[in-house]
Length: 512
Image (cartoon, rainbow, N blue to C red; front, top):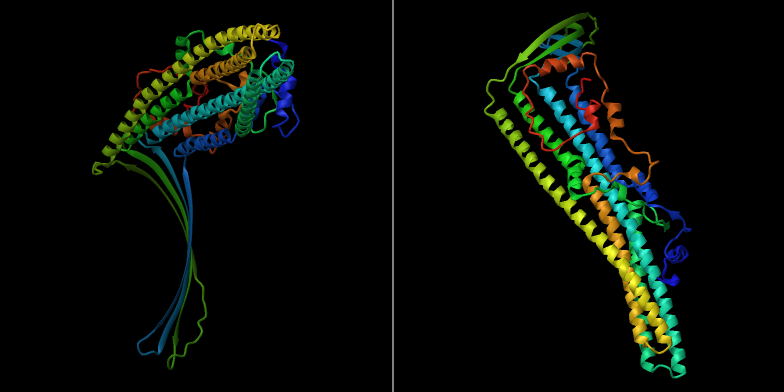
């Protein structure tokens, strides 16, 4: 390739001056990913959703703890009565108040509380995988807009160079026409190519402006001078079998569907637990007080009333009660049985969705792998084409100067070289994006691979902060009692290897 055809950073900066509102600056893919990771609104919303989901665990654990209720009642009554002869009037006022504190502590619910907590844990873990999927989608989008802008910047640069080269060719044609070396037709051909090159430049500028707008929407700021993308070779698997194995272990969609199935399985046991007996303790401390005044007044004729003097009399009492309540459902008209069947069918849906998700992931990985292999082959072929086209163009131009080639031959060679360079740019773009798409499908596209110093958002931080809120010393004992003779959560045969650090840290063992 001639020196005039090589990509130049200064030419790229000059091209960006037409579009960028700020000063040109050099940034890397890691910078773009770090900015999007910290500020992308989709990720921010998903993280907030996960924090809200953490509270379902706290709410499930609250069912093991005592419930304290305070009730206070104040009552006032004013009675005025007269005899039928209207000669006697009875007047009286009564005031009373009562205050009570009631404490209720469940001891055994037939496993309802235990299965409720298990379902909440599975839901929290499923939410984390949903968050991880959102992160990978965002990272993949950042990679795409980054390579799109890089491709369009290089495309515009080639278009600018092409216009300049053809303009020089046109000037040369005018000079040769003036001395009678070529005909008017040759000049017209050169003019046609210059006009076509200018149209291509206009299209390239419009496409670059569109890509920059998309970059702004995804990353959060306009792109400056973009550095070349870092290599992904060390992250990619050696074969499609390795890619599929890693996807079945790490893909967030597969893992999310696995946790969703665990959650619905826990809800089956929760529905069954409703048919079991329950036992709870209640204690009430009541404090009651009152005051009354009564007066009988003889009157000569109605409706003359004398004011009553209030003679208060107060009476207070305290009442303490404690009880143990056991309940056992005998007949519910088939309501609980219907709920059990409904939960079982919902679990069947989740199991079917697991297989559907697995197949979709396999398809996605296979497509990304094949696209990557095709793009690699295309890059190799396009590199060879660019080399050959460059030699042909240089040769045609030299031969045309000595009359061995026509102007049309030179223009065709130049167009072939420009097309080959554009094809190579697109092939490299497709190869890199296919590699990122493959990593995303495998569940291996991580922000720290591009920005090692990035502070990664850890959803476990918020969970650890709220999981022990209002914890009681006897929570573990009540949990153990509730497990006694409780319905067993049916475990399916493991078809997906799931290794979750959260499980090792005790998220699914709330009693730890």
